[in-house]
Length: 145
Image (cartoon, rainbow, N blue to C red):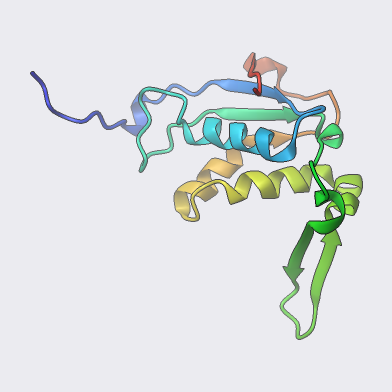
């Protein structure tokens, strides 16, 4: 019996393209599915220290929903680096003005906070509408439960 643990090598990885339709689905559920695909946790060859994940295309970000009172109570904060310059924007305004950024921040928060996570976040394409320019990659539709 072979008791060795499988460890994926970077040249053995086969990357796939997936499409997620976010219309009418909660922001966190879509982001969790996307981060799972980006990390490669859906594959039997998942290795924590290697980027085994796939490419993800997210469509219809403008139609994503937030449950409860999050539209008014959730605040996105960033700091410019100057004294007293903390910028705040509510989730309602963020989803109206820039829904792609809200989705990107949600996905980025679910990835590892290291070199590997920064490499994984580059494999996601986010669109607020239904059109995308990645038909040549023959993406497969991924259903969010």
